[in-house]
Picture 1 (tube, rainbow, N blue to C red):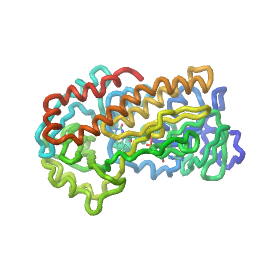
Picture 2: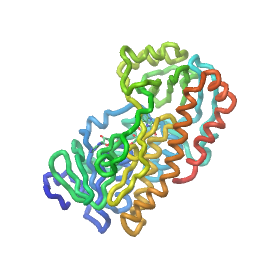
Picture 3: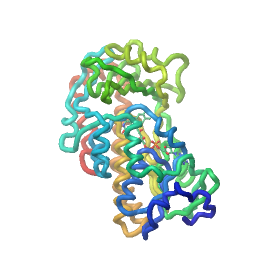
Picture 4: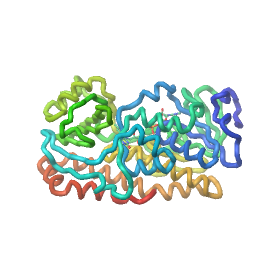
Length: 389
Ligand SMILES: Cc1cc2nc3c(=O)[nH]c(=O)nc-3n(C[C@H](O)[C@H](O)[C@H](O)COP(=O)(O)OP(=O)(O)OC[C@H]3O[C@@H](n4cnc5c(N)ncnc54)[C@H](O)[C@@H]3O)c2cc1C
């Protein structure tokens, strides 16, 4: 480590994990999905990596509720060698159903109609997914409770404990409010999408027909309530609503969904402590510059409408590791990375915008469209993502 203050280099330092090879000195900032997946993929290619994460280890493990992994996310997990480990903890999602808020069917199809030939779709708790990724990079690699506070054009990075490090490549995997993006790339702040949401995991042992694998319920006035079976009688619940401000409304949020039928009232009874989030989109389109790259939400956060955030983060990790392992130098690798990812991510952003507009169509028109063409629309939304990234 060419650190000006070696306080950070101790038994927990990733430098202890393997001899520094001839490859570039890489720092991954953030140990979320994209950071851990990238780290695993880089280690597998023989590159040494430092990883810092601002959260404490136990705080991070406790995050979140559930996670839907569409087939391109599963393919990327398999690509980084984590397919079997994830499968052991995941629940297959075989069908997708769209209902109105009374529980009347609008559309239903097997996920193989969308993803046939790409792979299965899975649901998993966020904690379990994190655990798989965490175990894959090793218990001691990530320097927890350490944030990057600044990075400069010369590859010098300052950490929250006062130490600094020098790197050939700094990768911002630090989420929608990325410090790496702010300090090295500038550009616009994330844009509030006019939606807020709540997530929680409920227990439900009933075999009710509207609670099998993936069911989205669409209400009037931009409200939806999604459930995904996680296995072991757990149901991941996700509810969202339009909002003019990025803050929770006054009072109990659950009253916003009081007119939803079927299983929703009994699930809501368990949602008092749901995680709240205001949804933002990161609108920068430049994810590389000399000595730095952005991956995952740091590069391209968007609405969870297509559940493609995790998939794009995993694909970014795989592609960046590939280009770094195969290109003649870091600059060539970064150029190849941006070129391989730009169109695909732009497609997802555009589809999310289309879906967000569709949720605000007059309810009878939206329901009629989904009854007539729901499967066709879902298939078209995802078509280019069937190709390997
Ligand atoms: C409500 C909601 C539901 C979603 N559901 C799904 C879904 O079902 N399926 C799906 O595929 N996607 C889903 N997504 C999207 C998905 O969660 C994200 O796209 C994904 O987590 C991005 O991973 P990431 O690693 O890029 O960012 P993050 O998961 O945000 O990780 C960033 C990490 O960087 C750390 N960090 C931040 N700043 C610093 C710093 N300065 N120094 C060091 N560390 C730092 C953070 O603590 C964090 O651990 C959802 C998103 C939301 C908001």
